[in-house]
Image 1 (cartoon, rainbow, N blue to C red):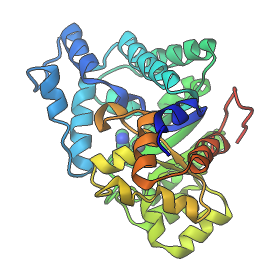
Image 2: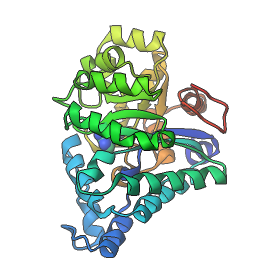
Image 3: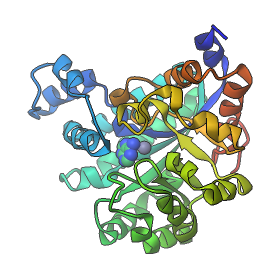
Image 4: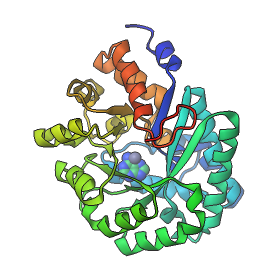
Amino acid sequence: MTDYSDFVQGLPKAELHIHVEGSLEPEMMWNLAQRNGVSLPFRSVNAIRQAYDFTCLQDFLDLYYAGMQVLNTQRDFFELADACFRRAERDNVRHIECFFDPQAHIERGVPLAHVMDGLSRAAREARQRGVSVSLILCFLRHLSERDAFRMLENAMPYRAEFIGVGLDSSELGHPPSKFERVFAAARDEGLRLVAHAGEEGPPSYVWEALDVLGVERIDHGNRALEDPVLVSRLRRDQVPLTVCPLSNLKLAVVDDLAVHPVKRMLDQGLLATVNSDDPAYFGGYINANFVQAGKALDLTRAELATLAENSFAAAFDCATCGASG
Ligand code: ADE
Ligand code: ZN
């Protein structure tokens, strides 16, 4: 197959694993730093880009949290999310379930209202353009469960603005079971549950996300393939995996896209989807993830179409496709 780009562009898709803060392009970071009088440890937009050379998840997270210092006002959050959603629309994305990391802003003294009002307005305007958008609030796993509880409580006045909770940030040393009680509380609020697991962490973290937290989707899940019993479970229950090939390459989760597990996931009957994670940092939005993984793994049109169809099957509340999870 040669015309990957045209074929992928023609596929309607749902993006289920994108962090809005990870769509902060260097140009926007630079401009917001000027506007807000924030000093960055970079001398130019190019210098920001050149710093994106990671050897592991923590390397990336250090820069990701440093970059978001420029986000302060409701307008900043609106502009960030608005650009993120419009960029996805250009890739023929019809539905977005978008992560955000409010603890990373609140702990810098940014009022939660600035975050929520800015993101919610961008989501509302996207819906008016015909793309369905939902927000998922992520807890930072390097912080305590008590912090996560406080976050959940503070977010309750905005309950209507997000559909679920997730778990992200530094995986190793922070197993899902650390958050058992706060996920139970979120479930009691009627929130949908997802968690990053098996990106760098072992298969036991994927088991815990499923059996202790009760999540409905696994974000990444690469290392689940090391455990055949876990693979059977994921296949039996058709648990969606939101896989992010370019992220995995940039963070050295895989050495080469030619050995990326997404093809093996499909071959083993798993409900894999392709997503962009933090596209401003990892060199490509959703179509670039489809095209580059497709070429490296020699995926067929049928496999690419299956990945796109899976994204709607895995969606929680896609207004434009009728999915209801
Ligand atoms: N936060 C943003 N991107 C992330 C990733 N790939 N893994 C864990 N936490 C994240
Ligand atoms: Zn992620």
